Every structure is written in structure tokens, then in C-alpha cells.
Length: 279
Ligand code: GUN
Image (cartoon, rainbow, N blue to C red; front, side, top):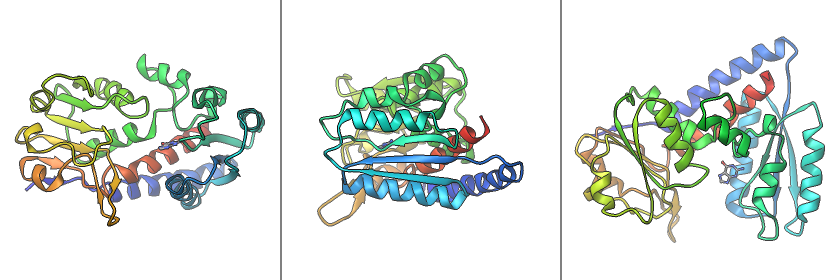
């Protein structure tokens, strides 16, 4: 039986630590708000945005909500970001993705002041991560490092295979594992002999966005498996990128879906917001 890594519990611990820290900062007169921008009303985005605002409320930081219509132009969005960049009381700015197709996501990310980019998506923060300098780190991979550390999973010298090379998860994940002195392999849709490569992993991090893609043939006995995927089927049943029932008996430890990586993203967003308050 694998150890089930409890993301709900670990994210709650982190939020409680941050809540205490915010109390202390407020006692010193240090405050600040997170601006949350949503364009359009994609239902999944609305759920994420609501949860982010709730987390702000829980840890004690203000959130400013900007719910803009689907018809918002890129120019209007960039203008709002410019205003928030120059507002001292706004310490963090988050633009919920995806944006409508008429808006260039890259231009929007670049418009956010890197010092307020609590998502860690701005090229300045991505570059800082790569060369080991201070900056905001993308929340999902930062959350996975916390899951591993707080579950006692040693990374140093271990072979970590990351499946997926997205800018938000796969690429920053591989850099963070490298920072922890793991040996890292990044794999993707063009990787040859993917099951064979994955079977060499001591730590397998799966972020491919394909429901239950990873079966037992991809996993070495005794591996630690982190599942970043989240998919809802027609019966509303949630599953990850990993076939949990098949893979779990092989593993030393594994994250469930839901209740694994998911809750960590918001906890780490709150961590970045508190860092922004302190800066
Ligand atoms: N859409 C899906 N995940 C994220 C995230 O972490 N941040 C933002 N801004 N949008 C997202």
C-alpha cells in the first residue's frame, strides 16, 4: 500500500502558517491587496477565481475583483493592468487564464509588473528561477516541492522524470527539481519509449493533461508518483492523468485526485502574495 500524499492537509497547514504571518505583518502596519482579473465567464475559471478570493479572505489579505466581459479588448485589459501596476496598495496582480482568443496572453503576462506577478509567469520571474535568483515561482510546481518536502520524500540524487513541458508546470517543475539536486529528465509527446523512460523514475511527475494516461507499465516499483492532471467525466467523476487504482499498489507514495496537487496551487499563490506584501 502506498503512502497517500494529502494535499488538502498540507495546503491547510501552509495557509494556517501564512494566516499567522499576515497577522504579524498587519501588527507592523504592513498590508496589501491581490487584484484578481477574470475576462469572460468560463465556469472552470470562475470556480478557481472564487477559491482564490476565499483563500485571500482566510489568510487575511484583501482581494480586489475585476470581472470583465468577454468582449473586453486587449487595450482595455492592458490599461487596467497599467493602473494596478502603479497602485501602491495592490501588491499582487493575477489575470486568470485562459483569456479570450482575441487577447494575446503573452502580451498580458509581460504587462504585469514582475514585482507583482504572483503567478510567476512573467519572463523576468521565469528567468530568475532558471538562474537561481529570487523571484516568484509558478504556484503548481512550487506546491509540488512543498508536497514532497512535507511528506519526507528526499529529492537529492534521485532520478525525477517530468512528463509534460508546459511553461506553467513542466518546465518550472524540472528547474525546481534540479535546484533540489535531483537528476531530471523532461519528457513530452515526442519522447520515444515513454513507458521505458518513466520506469527509470524514482519520482514521476505527470502533467500531460490526458485523463488516466499513465498506467502501471510506466511506473517502477517503489516510485513516488505526483499527478498534476484533473479531469471531470460526463458523470462528474474526477480523475487525474494517472490510473490511480492500477498504479497505487506499485508506489511508495502517490497523490490522489482530487486532494493532491490541486489544493497546493492556491496555497502557494497565497505564499507568493505574502512575499509580495513583504517586498
Ligand atoms: N489558469 C489555470 N491555472 C492558472 C494559474 O495558476 N494562474 C492563472 N492566472 N490562471 C490559471
